[in-house]
Length: 125
Image (tube, rainbow, N blue to C red; front, side, top):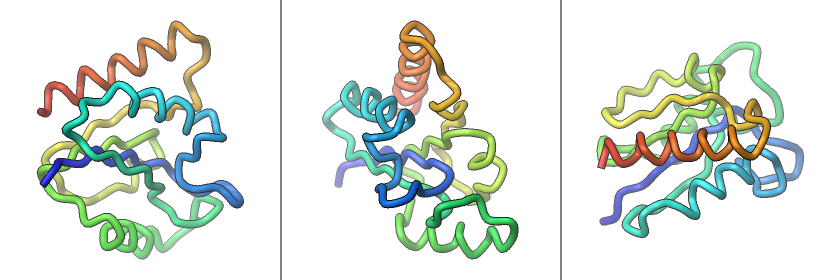
């Protein structure tokens, strides 16, 4: 079985898939995916399966995320941004916490951001 890299964004955008390639965040995640080793399967997800950050009952959404994705300690889970990192309370061994890709401006900073994530993934291989 191949190991997975699971990208976790915060919430859905109207009529789009999680971390959709039409969004700035999705485009940056796609660039990371294109540089990943071929021995990984990648998955794009959002922690909150709705179009806005919930005001309460976070546990319900986190439990839904868990049962939808069934992460294991063999997976690498990349938490995109402070909101996701704040609410993600699932105990796993291989978690990478990074700034949200939408906060990255400029090609040079984008390249540094992508290389940082790839370096962190390689540390966990």
